[in-house]
Length: 200
Image 1 (tube, helix red, strand yellow):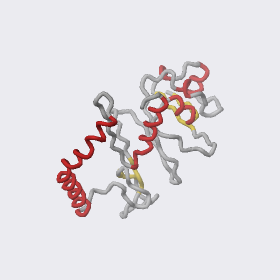
Image 2 (cartoon, helix red, strand yellow):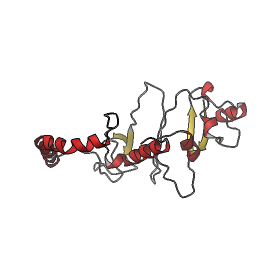
Image 3 (cartoon, helix red, strand yellow):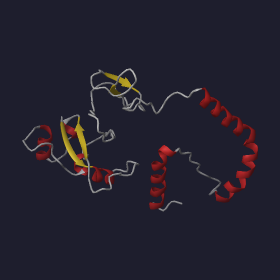
Image 4 (cartoon, helix red, strand yellow):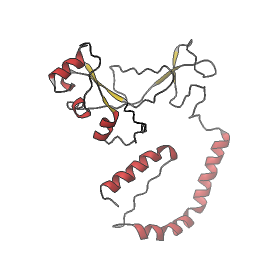
C-alpha cells in the first residue's frame, strides 16, 4: 500500500536489533519501510498519503518511530551493499522466513550477466566459491577425531571444571554460551546489553 524511508541509525536506536552499526564514517544509510495495508501506514495523514501516492517529491522520509507506529508485525531483511546489480523481491504468498538467493552464474558458478537467474546457496559468492560446502572426507575424519577426544577425556575435564564452575555459580546456576567467530558480534552485544542493565 505504501513506502517510506527512515534513517538506519534512528531505526537501530529504537529497536535493539542485535548487530552493531558498521557505518562509522558519518553516513546514515536509509531503511525502506514497505506497508502491506493502509492500516499499517504512519498515522500522519499527509505522510500516509505521500507514502501511497507519488506527489513529485520522491519517497517520503520520516522518523523510525513514525514509520513503525502502526506495524503490528515487522519483518526485517538485512542486505549488504554490493558492487553488483543487486535486487530484492518481496511477494505475497505462504509466509516463509527463509531468504532465497538467486544469481546469474555460469557453469563454474561465477557471475555471468548473460545467464538466467538460478537458485543458489546462501554462501555462494560472485567468484564461484561456496562458503558452505558439505564437509569432505578429511573434514569428516577431523570432526570424528574431535568427538573421540571429547569422549575419552570427558570425565577428566569435568573434574577439572567442577571447582571453577562452583566458584562462579550463583544460586547453583551457571549460564554457558557457545559461540563461533561469525556470531561474535552478537555475543559482544549481549554482554554490553547485560552490563548496561546492571546484570553481572
